Amino acid sequence: MTLPDRDFVALAQARFDALANYQVTLKSTSAGAETVEVLYGYRKPGLVRMDFIRPHGGATLTFNPESGKVKLWPFGMDTFPRLTLSPDNHMIQSPQGHRVDESDIGALLVNVRELRLHGDTQVVGAETIGTRQTAHVTVTCRAGQFATGVFRYELWFDLSHGLPVKVVSEGESREPIETVLMENLRIDVPESQLKPFG
Image 1 (cartoon, rainbow, N blue to C red):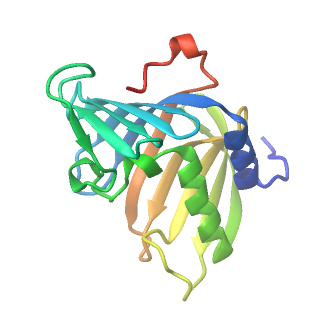
Image 2: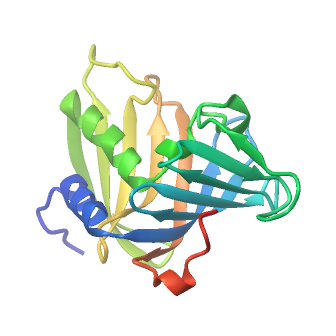
């Protein structure tokens, strides 16, 4: 399959800017850490809901940008106890230091665009991820420009909706930091089908 000559990062940003909400199953793997699997919901202007499948199966975490607070139900929403935490609390950050308030696709694209300013973007080619036809793109920091925790992103953008379905981040020595698979992505889900954001 021949890929169209497009700026897939810019297209993904435009698609994200246009959506109202999305739901996805996230699977994150990284060296030395347990695989994390989460049913993830996002609604503008930045509401987040994470229902953990593993580890901590049954736990629910929500973030509301209006309050700036995270609510955590260790045993499921509307059960006791409920904790109210700051997004920078280490207890609720990922092993890579990801925060709930910076966990959506838009935040990822901000990081990718920042790396692009100091790096090179290359379209590797067309690939199939699961059942999805994708464009495989790499964004690599130029030598001497390394300023953030990620030196290189590999991204697979779904050709049907334009958003990433797989992301691999690497450090300066090309060691993998994290691989995230985004499965069953649903965009602009009807409000009646969205789980409450607490």
